[in-house]
Length: 68
Image (cartoon, rainbow, N blue to C red):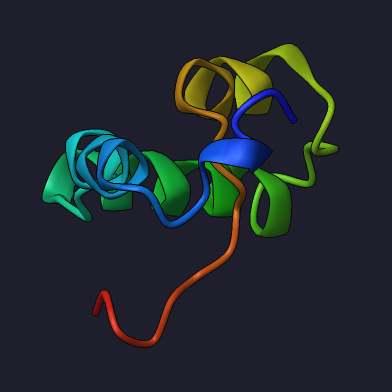
């Protein structure tokens, strides 16, 4: 919330560009692997195995139609 006053400024725009996540094959594989564990192997989302795949990048196990 500390960045709210900077919204729309040149600094904010530059930071958004710098911090933009790229949808790459590595990220897609992590999500696919997590989804496999959850839906095929019946692991809960909060298990160590699923968390290990998603936690570092704060990913969620949601498939994106624009990524495929």
